[in-house]
Image (cartoon, rainbow, N blue to C red; front, top):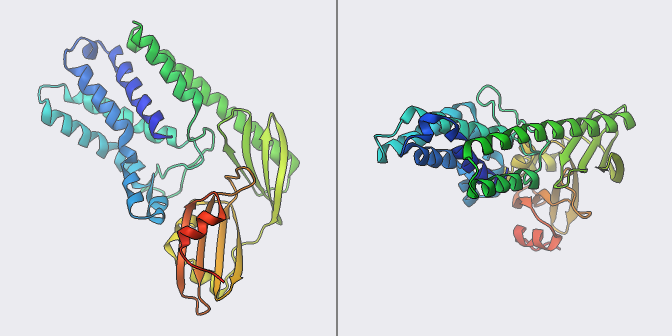
Length: 326
């Protein structure tokens, strides 16, 4: 989820914790636990600092080790240790418990969007992405704000946030059911489909679709349970040819391929350079596919420039590549 949603979830967990009389009746503990849940709700995303290196490192590693099984225990220990260092008299087992709940909730909700996490690492490095909730979901965010407003006007924090979380359980269950309906509809229309990639949008009634058959890739949208087709491409597995093999050694393209499950590729001669381009088909927006990987090579297959990430115009992409092609 986005940073704002993780922040409001951390705040709501701090309020929910006051259902425990031990916490509610302690003069210090509610503050310690609120700090713990806020930090815990953000901690797995501290790897965002990898953006300072480059997009390839960020894409390949974000939501990886920091969202892994060991991290579920390491983050709470670090957070609790920091809090106890400043307030040694606090009830550290409860701080540890709620730190753990905050970290687990962060990783759990991230599984439900189309980016996913490596939540089972080191048992498995597979990316788990259920594609049910958009990276920013207005209902989740604004329902938290509504609960905060009730709290500010005098409602008891614990019961208020308990009702909020019951509501969110129902909401997530409904979204899972809606995605299954879209998936089944696509498979009825394409019984030969080998894969159906369903991604949520910010609207409840709209889903992005990529349908893969043995021969074709269909880019479509499901809106109000009706599927509209935009483009179709031949499904061509990546060939074992020298220019592609050379391009795949580039970190940017390697990061793209580690992240994207469905894409199209093309090779184009541009003067003295050969350009290898991969385009993720899941994120079509206004007729444009913004998530790409580009590698430019010489005739001798030496890589001179590359890029992976989000770009919304060809002009911007060429500036990022910083190579003048003829």
